[in-house]
Image (cartoon, rainbow, N blue to C red):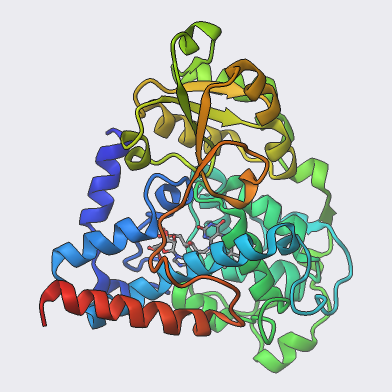
Length: 386
Ligand SMILES: Cc1cc2nc3c(=O)[nH]c(=O)nc-3n(C[C@H](O)[C@H](O)[C@H](O)COP(=O)(O)OP(=O)(O)OC[C@H]3O[C@@H](n4cnc5c(N)ncnc54)[C@H](O)[C@@H]3O)c2cc1C
């Protein structure tokens, strides 16, 4: 099945009423649209318009659209704070004992079945349910007392929907550096949402006791950055050879003959829609400096290449923007705004947001959501003509 067919299928399958009732369960009605949204194939606005056309009442869509708004909120925070999202935002993380990651987490051997199954899925398929992401982050930061950053990088590197804005800020939310308190879950809660029935584990305790716990033995062995981040899977040679495996052609001087403009695509911008609006050569720019800071696994590179390959005429350039600029020799460059693109030069195009007029800095998600909700409720009313 092509990426476009898979995407259409996933869009058709959205059931907002079921979503609202079951999204917290691993077997619940989540959409798995994450990889398409995070890779910029579609945006939250597109999903919203799709639901509007389906004729759903706003209150039926409420729970689902609110989750889409979390995505936009995190993007707005990244846009506002830039590199600042790599630092503890509201307060320093309390109780940190090290900056490594428990080996049991990296290997999916924590002894908590619901979590280990979820980590297995992450490592094998690049997918992980939201609740398991929260449990894993809780285990690493709040029980294992790791600083959030390396664990977040590890999870990001494996997620097909890896998005550094949603990722870093969600980890900070769990670790209490971007929220009012640390997130906590016990075995009973995990059993309920992951369809497991374990007892007697180190999480089988009341919440008050868990908060006071020492690091459990199972989380004592630690692993460092070089061992858990897939640097070699996304170095320059590896990226080029993966692109070639997928049949993508690399950019040559001949491709640019007689051309006036090019459109830049990258790991965060692979929209089919945007490309069709501009008649210029599409180039997938893979900057080694970006992947050195935020390494990704081969699975994620494969997914990116399968998407890129469906954009007609796509060429790949592995190198920094300044090197590409020299090759382009004066061609006009189009690109989409993104916090990792601040150094690109050329004609900037805006991303699509759920509610484009709601911008700026917000003290919390709910102050952001209040404005987005108002705007979308109005739009839904107008669309339905009542
Ligand atoms: C520790 C942690 C790390 C995370 N890392 C990422 C990440 O790297 N990339 C990423 O896109 N999301 C991340 N999330 C948010 C969320 O887990 C995923 O967006 C969601 O699980 C994706 O699955 P889905 O597409 O089936 O989502 P659905 O539940 O079907 O939701 C549809 C879309 O809404 C958005 N969305 C839903 N829930 C959230 C949320 N809580 N926060 C932000 N957006 C949301 C996503 O774009 C998602 O694809 C993280 C959450 C946690 C707790």
